[in-house]
Image 1 (cartoon, helix red, strand yellow):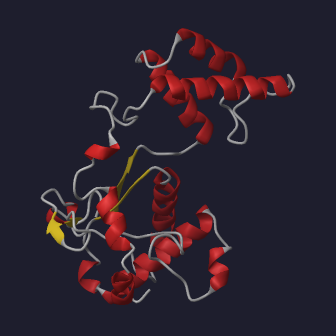
Image 2 (cartoon, rainbow, N blue to C red):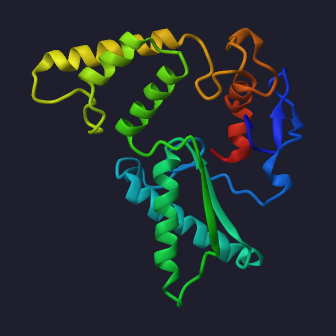
Length: 227
């Protein structure tokens, strides 16, 4: 409803209008909310909400796809693509690999996987952070002082800690200081499009987050979706 779906939400927060640029105009699209408990997805077994992780999400997504194809067999021979953004940098490649490995079992439904696509993929926390601050500096959004401080005190090697190890707690403090300084220097801009007009919440247009939240919080909608 916010970006890719067939409908957008009007200002009244109750009615919809068609999205002119919806993906379902060129493809059959399944929007899968995973892992269980995310969005409107749910499980009848409450333990599923604690047994989480990338591997579990991969297997659950695969089981869903197999069951979906069994229920709608007319789509079995269709080309299949997996797409996602952000943390899908984990989910999409792992699901694709799992599908390919399971497809080798000729006694079960084969998913006709043809490709994957990931936007702004979050694959490794440390590497992504390093790339982001390099980008900010090379595009004049961070000062030389900040860039030098980040390179001096942060190593971006481990996802557990981006501070340089072996030199005591001071490096951790200094690394955090320069990272915070880098974000402040960036200012209120769209990090995904630094040349776009400055973000202004009061200028949000119909169909964006505010109106979507209104309609999704409507109790009547929950009844319709049997949530």
